[in-house]
Image 1 (cartoon, helix red, strand yellow):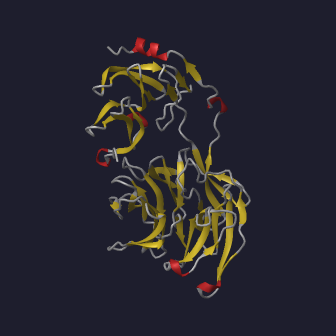
Image 2: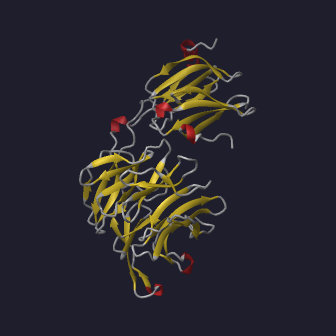
Length: 431
């Protein structure tokens, strides 16, 4: 381990390391939960392990062999002279190039060769990722929510159907369906994700980086009480589902030896965590049935993600495969007579379930496509969580839709600038 974000000082991540010439030090960016413009460029001396901030308000720095640091700020490349032997900046940074494509996350789309050639994508800072939440019924008809466009993920409908808790960027927000208001729920600079309602609708659980690795916290849904930490582990944890009686939480823990496992946490005064499904494969996205007797989840034990069902809480007493042809992120209908999941192409699939008498008489129907793909699902750009929810009557699905991008904003060229170091030396003296 070379560096670790200082959560007490609001640090979220350490990103984009670059080993400086000679191998003595590493240049990197410190981000916080605030806007990327508040990021800091720092250097770590590998011999002394001393770490210091070089520049406040910039990201994704590169070292140029002309003796400069070059970094991004809101679509502009800035440059400053840099003393490699002392690991210090010299003088004041100046703008070196305008209109360089810089993502909302702080990535400056540039490359610099050792001989002085610059390559970059023009365009400045594009609008942040824009998504909307929409209702889609079983006939494919869309009914947009009036919530403003945002970078939405992981929507969860409250037990009374009146509110939606949803992640947007690094916080949890709550959308009131009747009043049509979007209210920020979490405020910590650390990343807050994966909201989960308690069955009585009084609390929202979520995972947070506010005190180190993602652990599990909860807070009163009306914001009247302080945030309370429920778990304390060096491993990443993700909440999924609370039992109907409100006494147990199913969550995921990422363990080095066994990968992603499902565990149970008692929510009474004495909180205990114990394994539910722990194998050499990955188990995630666990959901307890409305009657509290069943657990559906996602596993890659067959070589691809499929949906499985086990009894709950005695998860080792049986197992059935539900999906066919791949499946991810399952959820129950509130009636308990149907469950849903996403197919590999993003379609919403439905499966009728029936339990007659004891557990041995469990029956699952044939999966049927209910909604075509085209809505946000897990993938390379998202975390592996459930990006949809189901209405109380099971007839509509709350899905997230990417807004169309203006074709004129898509970069259509890459610019190459030869002998760019000469321009750098003209703008910023290294003497």
